[in-house]
Length: 154
Ligand SMILES: [Zn+2]
Image (cartoon, rainbow, N blue to C red):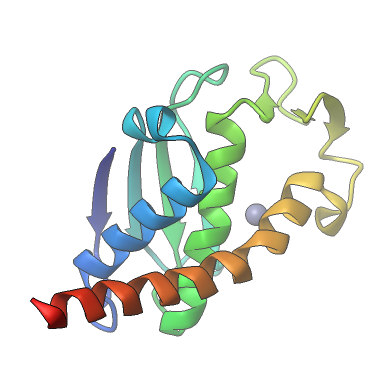
C-alpha cells in the first residue's frame, strides 16, 4: 500500500497517521486488496470533519484522497480517519458503486440508493461508517499500546 500524508498537524506525527491508515486498512480489507491501494491523507480545514474521494476508475477504484480537518482533537481526527477508511473499504471492495452517468445514485450492497432523496443519516454507507469508526479507533489504541510494549522489550 502506498500512503502519503500532506500537512500533518503538529499534534499528530506522519508516523502515527501512516500506522493508523495501515491498521484500519488491514482490519477492514484482505491483504491482497490492501497491497494495491494508494491512500493520500490531506489535512485541511474546509469546514467539514472529513471526506473520501477517488479520481480513479469508478468501477474499481484503488487510489483514494482523504481529507481530515486538522482543527479537530487527536481522538476526533483518528476517528474521522477510521470513518473515511470505511468508505475506502466500501469502494475498493465494490460494496459501494458510483456511476458516472447518474452521480446521484449509488449502489450499496446491491441496492440502488438515491442520494438526492435520502437523508444523510439514513445513507446505508454512512450507517456502516459511523457504526464502525469507534471500534476501529479503540482497536487502534490497543494496537499502538502493544507496538509500544514490544518496542520497550527489545
Ligand atoms: Zn461518511
